[in-house]
Image (cartoon, rainbow, N blue to C red):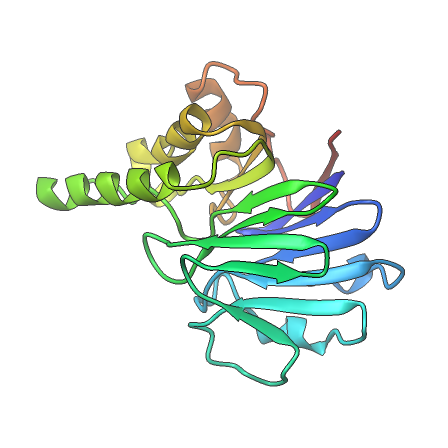
Length: 222
């Protein structure tokens, strides 16, 4: 399994037979492998998660799975999803969960791998927010994560947002403690790559966390 961290929350998981692109907003022209099935997942409409550039890729091997808050509806071959859904696409089972912002988070189970992409499902603990708001954000995040099906997740993409300052790691910590995760890759940090090594240090060197150091970094994971 090859994982490439494209940029921000954009990632691609590549297996022997398929490519799974999530929340792509950067150039991926050279990465498309037309010999494999190609799936594009979009968690929600925000500009740091969705770009219409991905719509140019067409063909029998290319399929799209979009949160239904995306207003661009250019063709019929898109699978539209909403929170709390259970969908089948080819050999995949796709479960969608709520977000603590917009759209959905994805749990994808195929015969090859189990993938979780959080999108904007995050523990949004804003430093200057009222305590009641902070408590609600904590409750909402934990409730959604606790409701995710108890399966062994091969790879989880979880937000680690530097704007949250000292609370940047809350979501990743809770997810690792609550779920069976083989590998965790941070997302939603823009150009602040140093936050990945900070997370590893914060989590006492947890070997499940992959240190992302640059754009389009690839890691070969078993």
